[in-house]
Length: 270
Image (tube, rainbow, N blue to C red; front, side, top):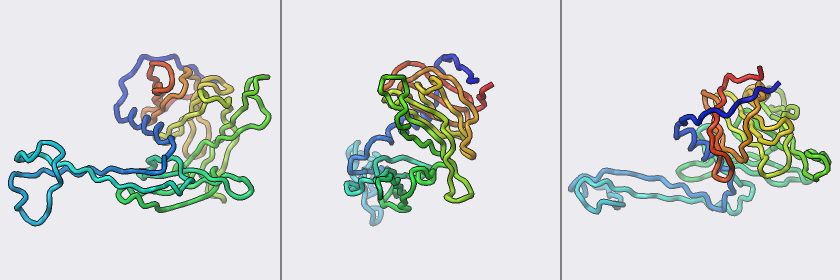
């Protein structure tokens, strides 16, 4: 039986954790043709350094030519991805910058694509294509797999369809991954879209309007098994962040609510 979590008081949250969650939310937005990376080089220019031997100083962004003023030069590089329609999102996975996306392959099947981006040159490497069920393309050991459930209405007689979520995890046997049973069903409406976060060996999966109500699933990154199913308050389009302390959930700018929720990593059904 699912445990119910009462709305706790708003807790202080490390700014880095919230920013990581907001960055995760932003990375799902469409990459509009060009990816630009800015590298900022800061050099302290001492009085009279221009005659100190062969190099040249970056122009000062502020402070003019005052002795000892810091000189800041913004170097911007860009890579045109307008011909690479298979990439539509960008994110940081395992310390690497990764672009991902999908294309329609032969016989109408969907093929997922991924590539690693060099943060300095923006050159693509490790370009791969394969089944969208393969977690390695996302750079994660487990992956939620969303799919429509044909001819199954979520609510009786209203025409709203049903989506299912299964968990794919890595295995030793070919094809090196396995897709498990349905762990969640959700209606096909924008405010009920599932969101998830990875942290400290767990995948945390949330939806506010699942067939079990508003709930969070704590899932093992090793086996893909659901370790806990916990009732939570309903937050439309929340942002999630996860670390060794558990799951943090807060309203997004286009969502609703005002509270911040923390669910400990030790939570269980009992």
